[in-house]
Every structure is written in structure tokens, then in C-alpha cells.
Length: 190
Ligand code: GLN
Image 1 (spheres, helix red, strand yellow):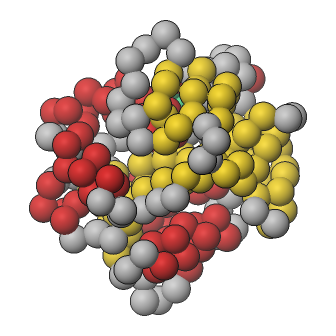
Image 2: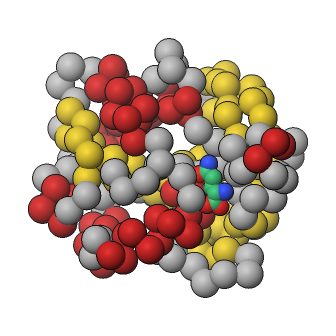
């Protein structure tokens, strides 16, 4: 099984390392081309800057193939900027992929200096949550499961094969449990 990490911008290496640590049989590769995308069973869209990622995804002609793969059932996990790109609605902007029935508000926790670390429950596991200029989820659709909350707001959600976290699990270096959860999603749909 191979998991791809979209490698245009953002925290790519950290995701690769944690996926590789889950299980020797699971490989992780950087995805920058349509051909690389075709070889993976699941895709992580990392955090970074969603405005930059939009431009690069268009430039690398990855919008249509990613959208088609996810619609055909490939598991995808967006962290932070990745969550923004997957959302059906982004306050004040046009949506990008529109593959996840949530509304988000960008940078809603404040400026860079307002980035913070919290702890909480993610699908029954107690985990650390690193928020870096994270989006706030302002609406969760009826078919969307909330996996984690922070101060009463959803910060991890799942709709079938689409997983999104407002925080950055890849920045908690020794904890691969959420990566393991995503690997389970990919394994189950193979
Ligand atoms: N603030 C960024 C955005 O709006 C997201 C930040 C992140 O991915 N850590 O795209």
C-alpha cells in the first residue's frame, strides 16, 4: 500500500516520516505529478497556505485528477490548509475541491502569534493538537462525523473517504496514531 503526500508546499516531509513509521508494508511518496498520483492508494494534502496551494495545484494540473480519484473513493486527508481546500464552503472565497460538507473560516483563531497547542480526544485517542493559523469549522453537514472538538468546535471531521483536521498531527513527531487511523481508512477501501 502506498500513501502519497501532495508535495507542492507545506509540511510534506513530516507526513512522509510518520506514515512510514506506521508499518513496514506501507510506503509513502511525494506526489507532484498526475503519474505519481496514479500510483497511490490514498493522499494527504498537507498544511501550508491554501491560496498558494490552489495556484500550484492548478499549475501542476492536479485539480481534476485529484477530484476524480476522491470522487471514485480514494481516501484523502487534508490538514489545515488541506482542510480548507476540501471544504464545500470557505467564508469570503470560492471553494476549491468542495469534497467535504463543512464550512470553514480561514485564520479564524487569529494571527501567527495566536498559534497554539491543545490536547483532546480524537476518535477515542487522547492526542496533541498543533494549531497554526488554523481554520474554524463553522458548519458541519449532516453526513459528516465529528472526530475531535476543541472548545466546542469541530477540529477533525470525516465524511466517508474524506478526513480533515484543522490541526497538524504531523508536527507531534513521536505520535503516529492519527496517521495510523488514516492508513486504516486506506486499507479498508482497497
Ligand atoms: N492559514 C493557512 C490558510 O489559510 C493555513 C495554515 C496551515 O495550514 N497551517 O491557508
